[in-house]
Length: 142
Length: 142
DNA sequence: TCAACAGTTTAGAATAAATATAATGTATTA
DNA sequence: TAATACATTATATTTATTCTAAACTGTTGA
Image (tube, rainbow over all chains, first blue to last red; front, top):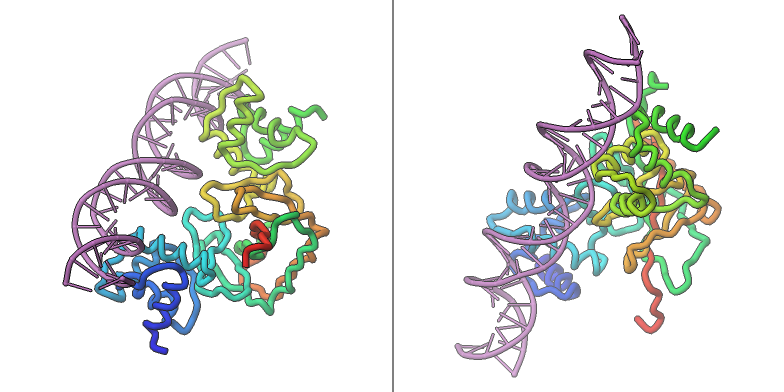
């Protein structure tokens, strides 16, 4: 299957028509070897640098949110001024370096399965995320 | 030790002078049996309802942030439009009900210790938080 | 005790992310 | 291919948070 067909499929499954802009967004997000983290602004910049297609903020927001709803992207729970997203939707966790505002993946194998024994009536768990905040380890500091 | 002395102590340890406004913030945050979650706006409202002291948003932000730095409050990592804070600084985790925008505590005993095997050179872990997002469990839905 | 200083409070302005709007453009369909 | 429904965009709006600067208050030391 050609790339663009995959993307058209992803878009349709997300309830979106395949447009020039949205296919470009797919290319940037999914046509790479490595998964990555991004903010909306960063994504817009990447698109600008890679293509001579213009994509507005609104389109990027809409598309990203549709993909999250469908499970093609993940939002990373953080109290940062901007939202961070992840193209890696497999089960894994994150370090967040607050000093450098940087996210680092923690591979699933590096964390024991998080097993929550408690349940809430009428509710089911949709996702479980572990955020480990890290800071400089200044031994001189007491 | 009288309450206000405790609060004055907490404030001084946070590098803040004990003022009328700040002591009132302490009363609302710490002078209750149960710990609770709050947003800045909610905290301002609680103060308005409880006292005839006027406290500005800026003061509340400053004081809350100083307390977080000192470890008297915790910020809950979430992608919500507002930041959520917790007066419970003991080790525990959260459900977040995205449909109702509501946080529910998960007691430490209800989650196995999260053991992260990976380390980052020069960095140490400051906190580990588990966020479990929950949604309605509509069995009829496929 | 009180003057001087350093820190505090506040209203309002500034900033910035995210969302809404409405006019123009494009994919889909029959 | 015409009609329709959905998309895109620039721009405006909304809203949380931070900044600012003037007025105020706690603290210190003489």
